[in-house]
Length: 394
Image (cartoon, rainbow, N blue to C red; front, side):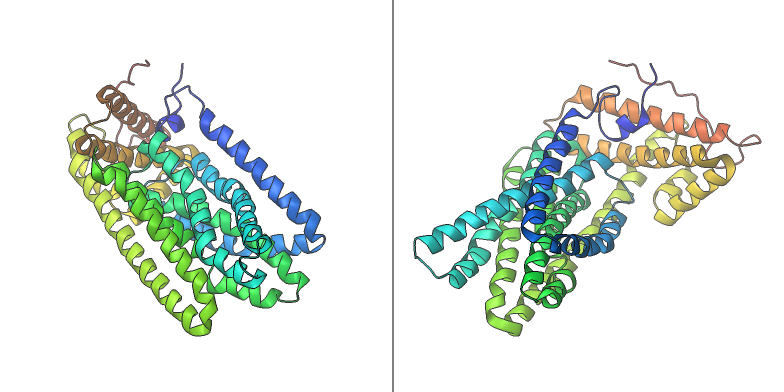
Protein backbone atom coordinates (compact mmCIF):
# COMPACT_ATOMS: atom_id res chain seq x y z
CA UNK A 1 0.00 0.00 0.00
CA UNK A 2 1.33 3.45 -0.90
CA UNK A 3 2.31 5.66 2.05
CA UNK A 4 0.72 9.09 2.13
CA UNK A 5 3.43 11.77 2.64
CA UNK A 6 0.85 14.25 3.96
CA UNK A 7 0.02 11.93 6.86
CA UNK A 8 3.69 11.69 7.81
CA UNK A 9 4.18 15.45 7.61
CA UNK A 10 1.14 15.92 9.84
CA UNK A 11 2.56 13.58 12.45
CA UNK A 12 -0.03 10.85 11.83
CA UNK A 13 0.56 7.18 11.30
CA UNK A 14 0.14 6.48 7.55
CA UNK A 15 -3.28 5.08 6.74
CA UNK A 16 -4.89 6.47 9.88
CA UNK A 17 -7.42 9.30 9.50
CA UNK A 18 -7.27 12.25 11.93
CA UNK A 19 -10.51 11.19 13.61
CA UNK A 20 -10.06 13.36 16.69
CA UNK A 21 -9.48 16.51 14.67
CA UNK A 22 -12.43 15.77 12.39
CA UNK A 23 -14.76 15.26 15.36
CA UNK A 24 -13.45 18.46 16.92
CA UNK A 25 -14.04 20.44 13.74
CA UNK A 26 -17.61 19.14 13.49
CA UNK A 27 -18.38 19.94 17.13
CA UNK A 28 -16.84 23.42 16.90
CA UNK A 29 -18.73 24.10 13.66
CA UNK A 30 -22.02 23.18 15.31
CA UNK A 31 -21.27 25.57 18.18
CA UNK A 32 -20.45 28.32 15.67
CA UNK A 33 -23.70 27.74 13.78
CA UNK A 34 -25.64 27.93 17.05
CA UNK A 35 -24.23 31.29 18.04
CA UNK A 36 -24.54 32.72 14.51
CA UNK A 37 -28.13 31.52 14.30
CA UNK A 38 -28.89 33.27 17.58
CA UNK A 39 -27.28 36.49 16.31
CA UNK A 40 -29.24 36.22 13.07
CA UNK A 41 -32.57 35.76 14.87
CA UNK A 42 -32.00 38.57 17.38
CA UNK A 43 -30.20 40.93 15.01
CA UNK A 44 -32.37 40.64 11.91
CA UNK A 45 -30.99 42.47 8.90
CA UNK A 46 -28.21 43.95 11.04
CA UNK A 47 -26.70 40.48 11.33
CA UNK A 48 -25.50 40.48 7.71
CA UNK A 49 -23.76 43.84 8.16
CA UNK A 50 -22.24 42.74 11.46
CA UNK A 51 -20.99 39.49 9.96
CA UNK A 52 -19.35 41.19 6.97
CA UNK A 53 -17.67 43.80 9.15
CA UNK A 54 -16.44 41.12 11.56
CA UNK A 55 -14.75 39.28 8.69
CA UNK A 56 -12.69 42.32 7.65
CA UNK A 57 -10.10 42.10 10.46
CA UNK A 58 -9.82 38.35 9.87
CA UNK A 59 -9.07 38.95 6.19
CA UNK A 60 -6.27 41.34 7.18
CA UNK A 61 -4.67 39.48 10.07
CA UNK A 62 -5.10 35.83 9.12
CA UNK A 63 -2.56 35.97 6.23
CA UNK A 64 -0.08 37.74 8.51
CA UNK A 65 -0.44 35.06 11.18
CA UNK A 66 0.00 32.30 8.61
CA UNK A 67 3.09 34.08 7.28
CA UNK A 68 4.77 33.33 10.61
CA UNK A 69 4.26 29.64 9.87
CA UNK A 70 6.34 29.37 6.70
CA UNK A 71 9.45 27.65 8.06
CA UNK A 72 7.61 24.70 9.61
CA UNK A 73 3.96 24.83 8.48
CA UNK A 74 1.39 23.34 10.82
CA UNK A 75 -1.22 20.84 9.55
CA UNK A 76 -4.08 22.76 7.89
CA UNK A 77 -6.74 20.69 9.64
CA UNK A 78 -5.22 21.52 13.04
CA UNK A 79 -5.19 25.25 12.20
CA UNK A 80 -8.82 25.08 11.06
CA UNK A 81 -9.77 23.30 14.26
CA UNK A 82 -8.00 25.95 16.37
CA UNK A 83 -9.81 28.77 14.54
CA UNK A 84 -13.20 27.07 14.81
CA UNK A 85 -12.63 26.30 18.49
CA UNK A 86 -12.22 29.99 19.18
CA UNK A 87 -15.07 31.03 16.89
CA UNK A 88 -17.45 28.28 17.99
CA UNK A 89 -16.82 26.51 21.27
CA UNK A 90 -15.04 29.27 23.19
CA UNK A 91 -17.30 32.07 21.89
CA UNK A 92 -20.54 30.18 22.58
CA UNK A 93 -19.74 29.09 26.12
CA UNK A 94 -18.11 32.42 26.99
CA UNK A 95 -21.28 34.22 25.91
CA UNK A 96 -23.39 31.94 28.09
CA UNK A 97 -21.14 32.18 31.16
CA UNK A 98 -20.62 35.94 30.89
CA UNK A 99 -24.37 36.48 30.58
CA UNK A 100 -24.99 34.28 33.62
CA UNK A 101 -22.40 36.23 35.58
CA UNK A 102 -24.03 39.53 34.71
CA UNK A 103 -27.45 38.18 35.63
CA UNK A 104 -26.14 36.98 38.98
CA UNK A 105 -24.81 40.43 39.81
CA UNK A 106 -27.81 42.44 38.64
CA UNK A 107 -30.73 40.19 39.59
CA UNK A 108 -29.44 39.78 43.14
CA UNK A 109 -29.06 43.57 43.28
CA UNK A 110 -25.40 43.32 44.18
CA UNK A 111 -24.67 45.95 41.54
CA UNK A 112 -26.44 48.08 38.99
CA UNK A 113 -26.40 47.03 35.35
CA UNK A 114 -23.63 49.42 34.30
CA UNK A 115 -21.38 48.50 37.23
CA UNK A 116 -22.19 44.84 36.70
CA UNK A 117 -21.06 45.05 33.08
CA UNK A 118 -17.78 46.63 34.17
CA UNK A 119 -17.13 43.99 36.83
CA UNK A 120 -17.89 41.14 34.45
CA UNK A 121 -15.77 42.68 31.67
CA UNK A 122 -12.82 43.37 33.97
CA UNK A 123 -12.74 40.37 36.29
CA UNK A 124 -15.09 37.72 34.95
CA UNK A 125 -14.81 37.72 31.16
CA UNK A 126 -10.98 37.61 31.02
CA UNK A 127 -10.92 34.47 33.16
CA UNK A 128 -13.80 32.77 31.35
CA UNK A 129 -12.64 33.64 27.85
CA UNK A 130 -8.94 32.93 28.29
CA UNK A 131 -9.60 29.60 30.00
CA UNK A 132 -11.98 28.54 27.22
CA UNK A 133 -9.54 29.60 24.52
CA UNK A 134 -6.67 27.92 26.34
CA UNK A 135 -8.56 24.62 26.58
CA UNK A 136 -7.67 23.62 23.02
CA UNK A 137 -4.00 24.52 23.59
CA UNK A 138 -3.89 22.46 26.78
CA UNK A 139 -5.49 19.56 24.93
CA UNK A 140 -2.78 19.77 22.27
CA UNK A 141 -0.15 19.63 25.01
CA UNK A 142 -1.75 16.43 26.25
CA UNK A 143 -2.62 14.65 22.99
CA UNK A 144 -0.69 16.39 20.19
CA UNK A 145 2.51 17.49 21.87
CA UNK A 146 4.54 16.57 18.79
CA UNK A 147 2.91 19.49 16.93
CA UNK A 148 4.32 22.02 19.41
CA UNK A 149 7.96 22.36 18.36
CA UNK A 150 8.60 25.79 19.84
CA UNK A 151 7.14 29.19 20.74
CA UNK A 152 6.23 29.92 17.13
CA UNK A 153 3.87 26.95 17.03
CA UNK A 154 2.27 28.01 20.31
CA UNK A 155 1.73 31.53 19.01
CA UNK A 156 0.33 30.30 15.68
CA UNK A 157 -2.30 28.06 17.26
CA UNK A 158 -3.14 30.64 19.93
CA UNK A 159 -3.52 33.38 17.33
CA UNK A 160 -5.85 31.19 15.27
CA UNK A 161 -8.00 30.59 18.35
CA UNK A 162 -7.96 34.30 19.20
CA UNK A 163 -8.86 35.41 15.67
CA UNK A 164 -11.77 33.01 15.59
CA UNK A 165 -13.05 34.16 18.97
CA UNK A 166 -12.69 37.84 18.06
CA UNK A 167 -14.56 37.36 14.77
CA UNK A 168 -17.60 35.79 16.44
CA UNK A 169 -17.55 38.27 19.31
CA UNK A 170 -17.35 41.17 16.86
CA UNK A 171 -20.51 40.01 15.12
CA UNK A 172 -22.39 40.43 18.39
CA UNK A 173 -20.81 43.80 19.11
CA UNK A 174 -21.50 45.18 15.64
CA UNK A 175 -25.11 44.01 15.65
CA UNK A 176 -25.70 45.69 19.02
CA UNK A 177 -23.90 48.84 17.82
CA UNK A 178 -26.17 49.12 14.79
CA UNK A 179 -29.18 49.10 17.09
CA UNK A 180 -27.79 52.04 19.10
CA UNK A 181 -26.27 54.03 16.21
CA UNK A 182 -22.74 53.52 17.54
CA UNK A 183 -21.38 51.33 14.76
CA UNK A 184 -18.62 53.75 13.74
CA UNK A 185 -17.23 54.04 17.27
CA UNK A 186 -17.45 50.32 18.00
CA UNK A 187 -15.90 49.37 14.65
CA UNK A 188 -12.93 51.68 15.23
CA UNK A 189 -12.45 50.33 18.75
CA UNK A 190 -12.81 46.65 17.88
CA UNK A 191 -11.39 46.42 14.35
CA UNK A 192 -8.79 49.19 14.27
CA UNK A 193 -7.69 50.06 17.82
CA UNK A 194 -7.70 46.56 19.34
CA UNK A 195 -7.93 43.89 16.60
CA UNK A 196 -5.12 41.85 18.17
CA UNK A 197 -6.41 41.81 21.74
CA UNK A 198 -7.60 38.21 21.73
CA UNK A 199 -4.75 36.77 19.61
CA UNK A 200 -2.15 38.63 21.68
CA UNK A 201 -3.58 37.55 25.04
CA UNK A 202 -4.00 33.93 24.04
CA UNK A 203 -0.52 33.91 22.48
CA UNK A 204 0.88 34.25 25.99
CA UNK A 205 -0.83 30.99 26.87
CA UNK A 206 0.46 29.51 23.61
CA UNK A 207 4.06 30.32 24.50
CA UNK A 208 3.62 28.76 27.93
CA UNK A 209 2.17 25.61 26.41
CA UNK A 210 4.99 25.42 23.83
CA UNK A 211 7.64 25.80 26.53
CA UNK A 212 6.02 22.94 28.43
CA UNK A 213 5.91 20.81 25.26
CA UNK A 214 9.68 21.19 24.79
CA UNK A 215 10.52 20.64 28.45
CA UNK A 216 11.24 17.28 30.01
CA UNK A 217 9.20 15.94 32.92
CA UNK A 218 9.32 18.30 35.88
CA UNK A 219 8.29 21.64 37.26
CA UNK A 220 8.63 23.65 34.02
CA UNK A 221 6.22 21.39 32.15
CA UNK A 222 3.65 21.75 34.94
CA UNK A 223 3.93 25.49 35.56
CA UNK A 224 4.75 27.11 32.20
CA UNK A 225 1.21 26.75 30.77
CA UNK A 226 -0.30 28.16 33.97
CA UNK A 227 2.04 31.17 33.94
CA UNK A 228 1.13 31.78 30.30
CA UNK A 229 -2.57 31.58 31.09
CA UNK A 230 -2.22 33.96 34.05
CA UNK A 231 -0.39 36.42 31.82
CA UNK A 232 -3.17 36.21 29.23
CA UNK A 233 -5.84 36.83 31.89
CA UNK A 234 -3.90 39.75 33.38
CA UNK A 235 -3.40 41.48 30.01
CA UNK A 236 -7.04 40.91 29.04
CA UNK A 237 -8.26 42.24 32.39
CA UNK A 238 -6.00 45.28 32.14
CA UNK A 239 -7.37 46.14 28.71
CA UNK A 240 -11.02 45.73 29.66
CA UNK A 241 -10.59 47.57 32.96
CA UNK A 242 -8.83 50.51 31.32
CA UNK A 243 -12.06 51.61 29.62
CA UNK A 244 -13.20 53.20 32.88
CA UNK A 245 -10.28 55.63 32.88
CA UNK A 246 -10.80 57.21 29.47
CA UNK A 247 -7.96 57.93 27.08
CA UNK A 248 -5.33 57.79 29.83
CA UNK A 249 -6.34 54.28 30.81
CA UNK A 250 -6.58 53.20 27.19
CA UNK A 251 -3.12 54.61 26.43
CA UNK A 252 -1.62 52.80 29.41
CA UNK A 253 -3.17 49.48 28.44
CA UNK A 254 -2.13 50.03 24.83
CA UNK A 255 1.47 50.66 25.93
CA UNK A 256 1.57 47.44 27.94
CA UNK A 257 0.10 45.52 25.01
CA UNK A 258 2.67 47.06 22.66
CA UNK A 259 5.51 45.98 24.93
CA UNK A 260 4.10 42.44 25.03
CA UNK A 261 3.85 42.45 21.22
CA UNK A 262 7.47 43.58 20.83
CA UNK A 263 8.68 40.92 23.26
CA UNK A 264 6.68 38.31 21.34
CA UNK A 265 8.24 39.39 18.04
CA UNK A 266 11.70 39.01 19.58
CA UNK A 267 10.76 35.54 20.86
CA UNK A 268 9.54 34.50 17.39
CA UNK A 269 12.70 35.82 15.72
CA UNK A 270 14.90 33.89 18.15
CA UNK A 271 12.81 30.76 17.64
CA UNK A 272 13.30 30.98 13.88
CA UNK A 273 17.06 31.22 14.39
CA UNK A 274 16.86 28.21 16.72
CA UNK A 275 15.14 26.11 14.05
CA UNK A 276 17.76 27.10 11.45
CA UNK A 277 20.51 26.11 13.88
CA UNK A 278 18.83 22.73 14.42
CA UNK A 279 18.73 22.18 10.65
CA UNK A 280 22.41 23.05 10.33
CA UNK A 281 23.32 20.83 13.28
CA UNK A 282 21.34 17.64 12.66
CA UNK A 283 20.81 17.33 8.92
CA UNK A 284 24.49 16.93 7.99
CA UNK A 285 24.16 13.52 9.66
CA UNK A 286 22.22 12.46 6.56
CA UNK A 287 24.87 13.57 4.09
CA UNK A 288 26.43 10.09 3.84
CA UNK A 289 23.10 8.53 2.78
CA UNK A 290 22.71 11.10 0.03
CA UNK A 291 19.52 12.94 0.95
CA UNK A 292 21.11 16.19 2.19
CA UNK A 293 23.95 18.12 0.61
CA UNK A 294 25.72 21.31 1.54
CA UNK A 295 23.58 23.19 -0.99
CA UNK A 296 20.46 21.70 0.57
CA UNK A 297 21.48 23.04 3.98
CA UNK A 298 21.90 26.53 2.58
CA UNK A 299 18.55 26.30 0.85
CA UNK A 300 16.74 24.95 3.94
CA UNK A 301 18.21 27.64 6.19
CA UNK A 302 16.67 30.57 4.32
CA UNK A 303 13.07 31.37 3.45
CA UNK A 304 14.03 33.22 0.23
CA UNK A 305 16.18 30.25 -0.81
CA UNK A 306 13.28 27.89 -0.14
CA UNK A 307 11.02 29.98 -2.34
CA UNK A 308 13.68 29.99 -5.07
CA UNK A 309 13.97 26.19 -4.84
CA UNK A 310 10.21 25.78 -5.22
CA UNK A 311 10.22 28.09 -8.25
CA UNK A 312 13.09 26.09 -9.73
CA UNK A 313 11.19 22.83 -9.18
CA UNK A 314 8.04 24.20 -10.76
CA UNK A 315 9.85 25.55 -13.81
CA UNK A 316 11.65 22.23 -14.22
CA UNK A 317 8.83 19.80 -13.52
CA UNK A 318 5.52 21.60 -13.01
CA UNK A 319 3.22 21.66 -10.00
CA UNK A 320 3.96 18.06 -9.04
CA UNK A 321 7.67 18.79 -8.77
CA UNK A 322 6.94 21.97 -6.81
CA UNK A 323 4.78 19.94 -4.39
CA UNK A 324 7.62 17.45 -4.03
CA UNK A 325 10.07 20.24 -3.20
CA UNK A 326 7.64 21.60 -0.59
CA UNK A 327 7.36 18.14 0.97
CA UNK A 328 11.15 17.80 0.97
CA UNK A 329 11.59 21.12 2.75
CA UNK A 330 8.97 20.38 5.38
CA UNK A 331 10.17 16.83 6.00
CA UNK A 332 13.74 18.07 6.43
CA UNK A 333 12.63 20.67 8.97
CA UNK A 334 10.50 18.15 10.83
CA UNK A 335 13.43 15.74 10.89
CA UNK A 336 15.70 18.31 12.55
CA UNK A 337 12.99 19.13 15.11
CA UNK A 338 12.44 15.42 15.77
CA UNK A 339 16.12 15.01 16.63
CA UNK A 340 15.93 17.98 18.98
CA UNK A 341 12.79 16.66 20.66
CA UNK A 342 14.33 13.20 21.10
CA UNK A 343 17.42 14.66 22.71
CA UNK A 344 15.58 17.03 25.06
CA UNK A 345 12.87 14.74 26.47
CA UNK A 346 13.35 11.47 28.28
CA UNK A 347 9.70 10.38 28.44
CA UNK A 348 9.08 9.86 24.72
CA UNK A 349 8.62 6.50 23.05
CA UNK A 350 11.96 5.61 21.38
CA UNK A 351 10.27 3.19 18.99
CA UNK A 352 7.75 5.82 17.91
CA UNK A 353 10.48 8.40 17.40
CA UNK A 354 12.56 6.04 15.31
CA UNK A 355 9.56 5.07 13.18
CA UNK A 356 8.73 8.74 12.59
CA UNK A 357 12.38 9.42 11.71
CA UNK A 358 12.33 6.64 9.11
CA UNK A 359 9.11 7.95 7.62
CA UNK A 360 10.50 11.48 7.33
CA UNK A 361 13.68 10.22 5.66
CA UNK A 362 11.53 8.24 3.25
CA UNK A 363 9.45 11.33 2.40
CA UNK A 364 12.64 13.26 1.63
CA UNK A 365 13.90 10.45 -0.61
CA UNK A 366 10.57 10.10 -2.44
CA UNK A 367 10.19 13.84 -2.90
CA UNK A 368 13.70 14.15 -4.31
CA UNK A 369 13.14 11.27 -6.70
CA UNK A 370 9.89 12.82 -7.90
CA UNK A 371 11.07 16.29 -8.80
CA UNK A 372 14.32 14.98 -10.26
CA UNK A 373 12.38 12.51 -12.42
CA UNK A 374 10.30 15.39 -13.81
CA UNK A 375 13.38 17.07 -15.28
CA UNK A 376 13.63 16.83 -19.08
CA UNK A 377 17.38 16.00 -18.87
CA UNK A 378 19.63 14.26 -16.36
CA UNK A 379 19.62 16.30 -13.13
CA UNK A 380 22.03 19.18 -12.94
CA UNK A 381 20.50 20.75 -9.83
CA UNK A 382 22.08 20.42 -6.36
CA UNK A 383 19.21 18.11 -5.39
CA UNK A 384 20.04 14.67 -6.82
CA UNK A 385 18.24 11.34 -6.52
CA UNK A 386 19.10 8.70 -3.89
CA UNK A 387 18.38 5.07 -3.31
CA UNK A 388 16.93 5.07 0.20
CA UNK A 389 14.23 2.47 0.82
CA UNK A 390 10.91 3.33 2.46
CA UNK A 391 10.56 2.30 6.10
CA UNK A 392 8.58 -0.83 6.89
CA UNK A 393 4.92 -0.40 7.73
CA UNK A 394 3.97 -1.49 11.24
